Image 1 (cartoon, rainbow, N blue to C red):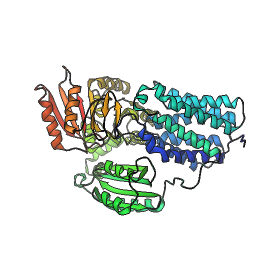
Image 2: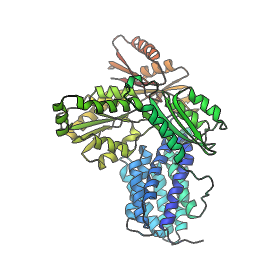
Image 3: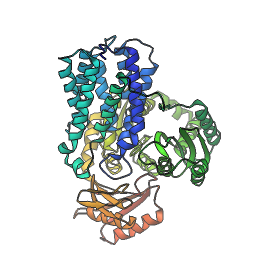
Length: 564
């Protein structure tokens, strides 16, 4: 069979097939993340990003492939989460710009589109690294160009792009030693290869209709929304909310790499019933949807993965939402002069921090942050989320603290499309974000504040304590599943079966002769009592050390530690 053009119908099927393919394989892609910590989210980020792109493409009423590709790129950008999602959006940004005026695509057009996508993706990354998604897209694009010189068959070009990308993916461990050490291929490259495979299968008629992923079940969504609205209405004191995280997941039953149980409604429901209230579990033969208010969203998510892969995850901090509602409702009761002044002269600079946990949000606000976007590890906000925070601040300018290097690219893209000038202070951790705030001067210009805050990043060492989700060998350690790890500025320094021992040894690994202040922030998976024990043992190391302990409520990491 030979095909000489791709019409709008074929292109739409390709995009939807790719979105489905990523959803089906998100857990597998997540499992390729190098660090054995419970924050592997490349698959989730790429899947959610492409879902957004696929919706934009699907919603556009056009018969021109160029217009559909532009819609896809726009949706990808606004929904982009994490570095992998942003790079995927840049691939299709270049693809769409090259083909913007095309009604249909020829073999040469298709090859040119992928070549432009590869070029745009490389330009989007400050320091391109081989052995990543960039290598995969470049090799695939080059193969497409080579084939288009010899053939006008779009099937031949698409097949060449996919096969070359797959071959390039296999070489990524040879290009990045850390991948070879752990024995995996690059997770972002794997995600892109799945996209290209879906394109290829779709064009060749190999996408089966049976078992297609269906992200929206209106009846179940309506039931979930109704329960949620009933439970959060009213003028509640935020502190009176017993279970603070509104958690929703959608699980594709029996799919994925982490399935340990056959689905049984009663078993599934009973476990969740012990984690919170406002529980609703609805299912059909393929999907189960959950809504629950809990203090442990991570446990809800992990339980879902026991029965299938995650098609959707949504976690909202209801205490923070209620604080916002109360602040809005109480504003008119305050001084009319203050209200009028605020309307006439909004804050000159909005400082937006991205973080997860009530305690961390409070800490950032105490340092001068004006707005907090809920997110971080496992919950990277989208470009749109950050754009909304900037625009809704009504400030004249904005500074964004990502507090996670996997959010850098999404934040940078948001700054480009926001309504007001915005800059990024490249804080890789919560500790760096807080230290950066010490360099902020409300009277300084935007670029001056960015420089001063960036300069402060190196003044702090950042430590994280979490647990391993798989056995592996990394950074010279033989790490066992379930053990705790101490990570200092991105490198594993400690591993032990005991949480407190790991935390103390992590602090020891961070100390030097100039260390003065130790800040300990304990998360949702530990207690104030354990944090106090850690404080006592740290103070016993050196009488001259000053320690502070704060409740952060952050998921994934029982302890965040900074040393200054």
